[in-house]
Length: 124
Image (cartoon, rainbow, N blue to C red; front, side):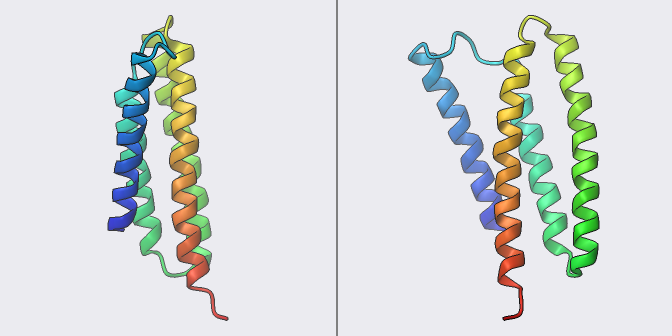
């Protein structure tokens, strides 16, 4: 669990650094207005969901809870994206694109760590 939190933190810091470098070199004209909120929300949700799933022992329950967590996550993130769009219409494209990139990165992290855990627990 500690390793996962450290990796999520490192990725969040790396993404922030990449944004700052991109801004400095002119690769992007401005930071997404919701970059910090998106980074914090996705980091925290990813860690909380991973922590909960990591503690489950039964494979049948794991699959059901994982699918439920994905559905709840998509609904919550959908509401968040709509709020971003309504609040910042001119910056909606940047905010949504940045959010989707973060979503893919953090979901991939979660899946990789969960797969390693599950694959390591298989009987040979």
